[in-house]
Amino acid sequence: MKLTIEVEKRQWRAGELVRVRLVALNDSYQPVSLDRRALVGPNPVPARPTGGPLPISVEPRARKAQENHILLNPWCFYGRERTFDTLPPGEVTFHGYLLRRVEPSLMPAAPHDSEATLAVAEPVTLTILP
Amino acid sequence: MGTIQQLVAPVYEGRDGQPANAQGQGAKPAKAWIKPGTGKIKVKRSYKGVVVGANGSYYITRRAMRRIDVHEEKHVSSTKSIYRTHLKPLERRVSQRRGRRSGLSAGNTRDEAIAQLRTEIDWNGAITSFANEDTTENIPMGTVDTIELAQADFYFDYGPRTVKGTDYAHYVDTPPGPSGS
Image (tube, rainbow over all chains, first blue to last red):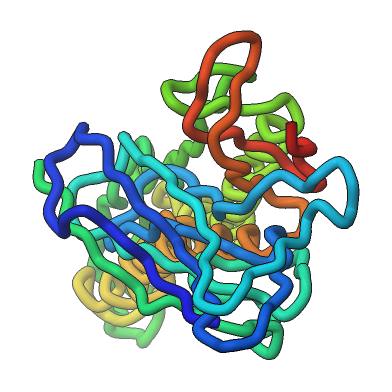
């Protein structure tokens, strides 16, 4: 699996709606089952945080347990887009990762248990201009 | 973070010692004390909670709001603890030396006595220690925030959701969160 964080541009003005996508690509020739609950991000981490911690991005659980799992065929992808309109001026780095198993204890850039990570996206840093 | 609301540095006063008389009696050491009304500190820490429901593009559930309050109370507790460690003892030291009667007898000259009293009080050291530790613990994404973020019951962003006919970009809740629609 390969994770990437996609953005339209690297510089934004404060108040603009920043769009960020976290994409999980099955970069193999075998189908892969992906648990949506194990995909974490995109998580914003401001270089100069203000206020309380920004919550970590996850998805709601499906009503039926099996619906949490998606079969990704070879070279197919899954992901999510999140928008942010209140990022503070300065640099903001976005993180995303895929867990081996659903973990309760998460941090923006990695789970608390580092062994639980299956794939990590290269962080992407944006500049929010005042 | 803890905000120092009032800071009145101590004003040191003192008198020279008295040498012994011709009979070798009556010698008195110098003395130093803190002028009454000085050497005061007041620290305040408060927070502005969030309301349940709409907060701009964020919808905050009742559970998340309660968890946010718990989080902010941890900051308040942290500042109180750091205050007890560094500033409560400082207040005690100042209180014990406030006024001439409670002064420190030391050295031969006023300046010597005051210098020793300054060392005993360690005003700047205590204030700096409080400020540094409070910053480390309670600055955004400092120790308290980092520990809290890793807790399984912390709040998460479950993404876009429609609540009572209004679309929100971020539905913030605590685990297990909402179920998918």
